[in-house]
Image 1: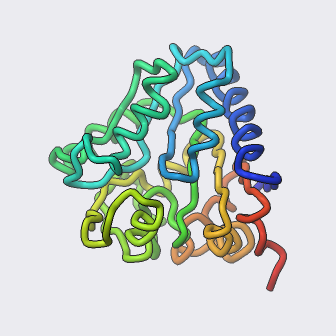
Image 2: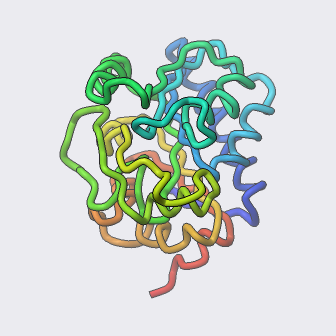
Length: 245
């Protein structure tokens, strides 16, 4: 795992966006298309803002895949990840080839449909984050490290749901859905390149577990240690516990 630490979320986002643009350009040059996974959440704000304002990105050659979505949440809800991607990436960038997860559809059918699309060819680059509980996508601890299904239905733990309230997406934990559709751990790991963007002190404990602890389903993001080409982008706050016992 390549760990890079920057002064603040803004510089982290800027450098991660530069790396992302290069990965997209390399894939388009090599194969004519860049198949990309994009995460959502507050941790991705600066990165996505920098990414969409970088000139020269061949967005017309990007095929975008959705990482996770709440079950039962309408796209009009402020916490909908479909809405998030439309407003912060797909619309501004002008991406036309997208595979969004319909949280209001039949969950098993949505998993099957999205799974067939993503399995058609390798993913070139995945943009992901790490949750306060160490989750990767919505794979909360203990995560399923064994399934080979591209997408699965998961139950969200209390720590994950409290994070959503803390970030302001919901007014109360009772309002946070208890189930979601998530890309599986092994599907994420099958990406050629993974850029993991994690600012903020509230992620410091999870970062330490993911980057310096043992690989364990109890810290789902620790599995990234096993990937051959993962870059972990941190700021001073999120990296503050690295190196401590």
